[in-house]
Length: 159
Image (cartoon, rainbow, N blue to C red):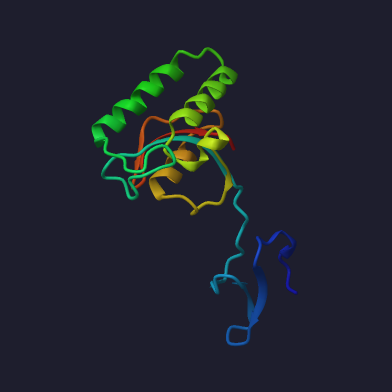
């Protein structure tokens, strides 16, 4: 159907034909979006993170504490302390090990049980400030503190 290579369409996309315009268009069966230009599959993102929630967080509780009472300033100070610890590491392997250890012990996210590993995720799956920070990092780079509605994060990009 037409001249484009449609074999590389992302999941849920298909080619349809517009009778009105007498040309092909692309339709997403899941979202019902339609467009003239061919969608491309974006690679997945991957990251580990350490989350420090505070009393103003969207959900101020975690697996560690039923009710989080720390202030935003205290959460930021905790994150800054973790960054200082990570800065002492001499290799990326040592940093990854230390990052995972800190996440497992201190992160307020349920990903702590996976050493902060969020696994692969699609663009648009995370809160915008978090995603923007991941995209800005190189693989194996660690962010400065990132603030979202969930709290304050340190992010290690993994893919």
